[in-house]
Length: 93
Image (cartoon, rainbow, N blue to C red; front, side):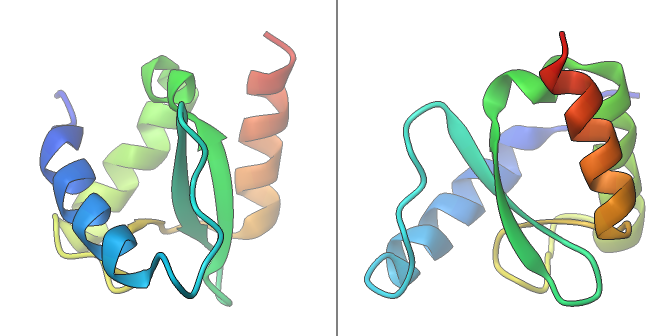
């Protein structure tokens, strides 16, 4: 049931390199993800990747997109309010 994030990180880092001149770079220890209907970009700590509630979001992303994400980065297929709810609970840990 594991989510193989390594392939996505490699692909996302390539896309990030291409778009680096247009976007704010992602700080070390963080990962950019795209969420919601408007594909809003969020930067999350990589430590979230180990949390069961965030892994559930990653499983949803794998089921919907596989490893071909439309934004070139990691896309989480949920509404922004759901994402913010999950990440706010993770911030409390």
